[in-house]
Length: 387
Length: 115
View 1: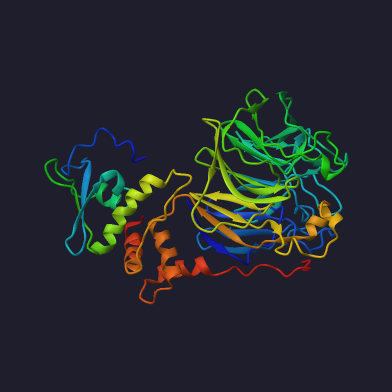
View 2: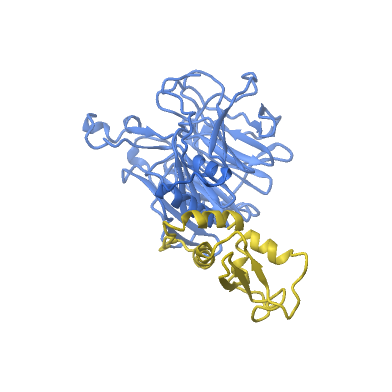
């Protein structure tokens, strides 16, 4: 397991939503400090070619009524060649309209849905289990409160339903992750707010319990875990590789810590392990995206404390406010690749790259491979760009 | 994966299902490796499994690699063992050693062998 590629110059995005479809990764919307999130403008879509590591912006000529407005804290799930984007907010409002992006035609649509449509929210989770998209928790725009509800959208019939659950329900939270393995939705981390309403940062908690919703019985339980259980956090990423759930990075406001650690959970043994790949991984961060293609995980974007975090000029009392914390954050435009099974060819590429040996007599395809591993992307837009 | 060698494998080098196979570099050096490990290179798997003439039961499974020099092939064989041991490890993974001089030869060999 090895961090192989690190390239700057991709989409500078935070709290974006991304999915892999075949060997492409599609990233939807997200926040970037300095951009205007009050105006209603079309959500941007970026696509990554995971072979050449090139990002491209997908332009749409479609009208506002079928394209979601630019937002953050939304979710995206892939189902066949279609991507369903739901929830999230801009600086004015949240949204509960279901949007569908067709990765073959690059066109948006608003599918007709029925049933009990969940309320507009952000910071929820979404995952697909047995042809259903499960939405859990998040912060409700109109209620100004958290929810603990589970809703599902049947992706065959496009019908929403409220899930009546039993068992030990996880407390209110946002910016957690939910991951489906073998019909079970595993919920981990997030900002827990036991009262269900946000007062101050003091009443948020970061539990490290793993919650499981069995989607055949709709019963919640707390999984009795062993091993190296990660410290609780929010705005981390979770992904599945070979029936293990991996958790990367995130932020714990009580500990004032950003993370860049990697853990994995084995649902067959309920055991957590700390995973230490070789190579240079990403710096500590939160609100990034992690997508798996084959045996490689592609991590991009997110946000970290600025280097001068300790000695900048903000007054002491502002340090614990969420708003002021945000002003001390640097938004990333980088891409990192974690290769679970690096081939000898990949190891040689890295070796040849680090040795800077003369490669003039290498075949053209191999030279091209070396080049794309080092060539930064060029699509990061300057701040204050509102296009 | 390769940890459980199928019981259908026969001892030694002979036959299409032998436990071991022989890889011969373009300078004549011979390397004997477990068939399961050699299959980690897709080109070797294709050559060993879909050769137009099947190896007879009393003949050895041999691959002549006319494009691969022995200084690269030995690194390839070490990589088979490294991959077999560490692909499922989560920590304490040592770096795979490749020397400066052989880097480009091994690179070309890995591209050809698809490993």
